Image (cartoon, rainbow, N blue to C red; front, side, top):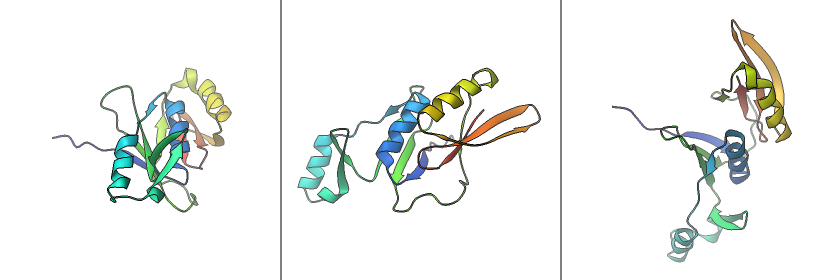
Length: 141
């Protein structure tokens, strides 16, 4: 039996980072139900401090998620944490585009605010390691 999972990434600005990754991957930011949020606050199960406004919409402050247009891929959740990233990731995403598209993809992501950290290769495999706007490392291979 297969186990379903999602990838969760800590962020100081989860909604902005979800927007960035959705654009980077061609995925969609999951909509949050404003009426459900308002009802939860009105019922006293959450407070106004648990919410924020992002791009003109009421959302849960704690996080945002993105989903792939291709079914079966894991959901990626960006959850708010109080501290900024300080050390190397123990888990990272690999954006696999192939040798022929790597340079164009790296240039596109750098133009979106990523930072190039280093280039590496091992045997026939070559990749660029970048960091997203919050410093989370990822590879473009």
